[in-house]
Length: 134
Image 1 (cartoon, rainbow, N blue to C red):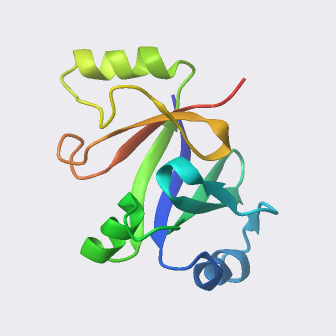
Image 2 (cartoon, rainbow, N blue to C red; image 1 turned 120 degrees about the vertical axis):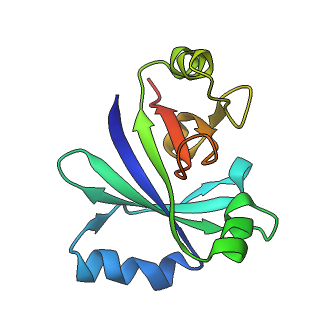
């Protein structure tokens, strides 16, 4: 298991990206990705040697990100860990007493299979597991 990315909830990708690109000197992927199932837009910023930051903007007022920003404001949203087998990793977490947000993994940004574990069970940090597409 390795840290895959850090998710940052933002009101506007266009307004937030300047800090990461100009201020920190990070390179953004060329396209902002629309993740229709989650009602968000995602911009990936590469953090060498092998992780990235995702700026996550709501594309609908009823998305989880919109609700998050409304309640807590923009900022750190989640930590994501890459796993080889999302099903096995989720089962292992369940066996340890942690309940995923969804019963089955969903398709997330970049075509990855993802599942989340609630911050109430993970010491205040929304935790995502992600299996990269083959």
